[in-house]
Amino acid sequence: STPPDRALAKLREGNERFTTGRAEKTKNFKAEHREALATHGQLPMAAILGCADSRAPIEIVFDVKPGDLFVLRNAGNTLSHAEGSVVGSLEYCVGPLKAKLIVVLGHTKCGA
Image (cartoon, rainbow, N blue to C red; front, side, top):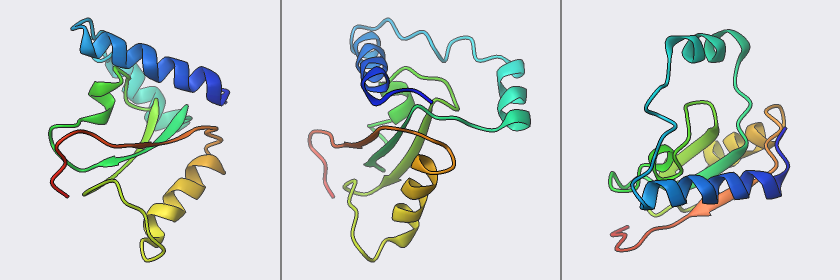
C-alpha cells in the first residue's frame, strides 16, 4: 500500500496538473487497465470523502485513474453517527483495501 505522505503528494501533484490544464491520467485509460481492476481488484492509495456537487469531480480534480481512489460523496461531505454506510465504507477502505490516507475534501460555494 502507498504510505500516507506519498499518497498526499500524489494527490497534490495531480491537482496541480488539473488546475494548470495539464491533466493526463484519464486520457489513456485502456481496456487492459479496466480488465486488471475487474480481475485483481482494487488497491486505492487514499479514501476521499467529498461533496456530491457535480462541479467537484474528485477523480478529475486529482487527475487519477479508476482504482486509484476510494471515493465517498454526499452533499456537504458530512459524516455523522447516523451515516453508518459511510463509516463502514471508510473502515473497509483502510482495513481490507489497506489505504493509509483519508481526505475530507470541501470546495467553495457549496450549497449543502
